[in-house]
Length: 183
Image: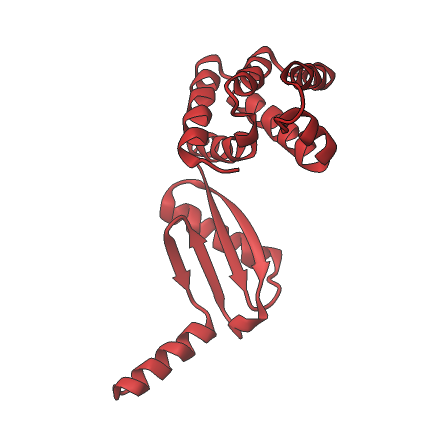
């Protein structure tokens, strides 16, 4: 279940608290751990989120999990608030937004790098440094392989795409030839 406006609002509220008390990273980790547990344990997820079960029982299960994980008071209160407001089902989306907002707060940007072949660590680091220099931020870089690119790389960061793939160059040449332009 995804409702981005709701998720963004709760994530921003939690980030403001984390920013004020200096525990934004702690909250990020605890939230990610809880979401990871909920996605791994579908029965637990159902026991907490399924409205077919009694509300009081679901809340007791949530409280027991929070106690077992030894979560901070803020995250404990946050999760219980989400439960009481009927928003616990949005937790994975809230966590995604929180991760992004916490990264922005620390000056970290996320980018993806898709290459036709497996790149060396040195080449990946050079791309990371180039993006970091261009944006002035630290770059968290996800790397994938797509043999259909034929050669080259495609880098995405937010709405920006740098496409240096041979596949795209060939497609552009084909379109130019169709239009009768010289290549």
